[in-house]
Image (cartoon, rainbow, N blue to C red; front, top):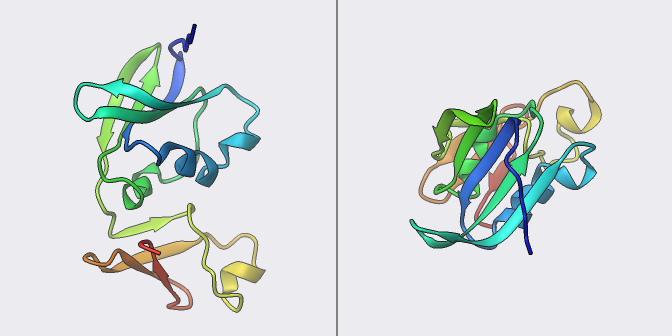
Length: 142
């Protein structure tokens, strides 16, 4: 029997499209976490039929709204005392930082450790972002 308990304090990433949960899990490097994390794949959903979800019993210092780049249907629930304190609907962000890395080996973010990765949206139709430091393009559809 599968039993996933509620969390006292942390984050629940809910309504992830089936199949995207593992990609988000890897992107957030939750496989390296030293706190409780649950990845649930193909859970029943009243809204979509099936969904993936991730429960994280900890705080993460990342702009989780940027996950809207990968899945615009997901919601982020901030949990305190086993209750939803805040529910965040995601959208395609105009800017984000700290999740994706610039693939340009000459970019300052590749050599300087303390520089935070920042990207700006340049094409909403094609989901293309531009590195704020070197203008290298990041196509999220590839």
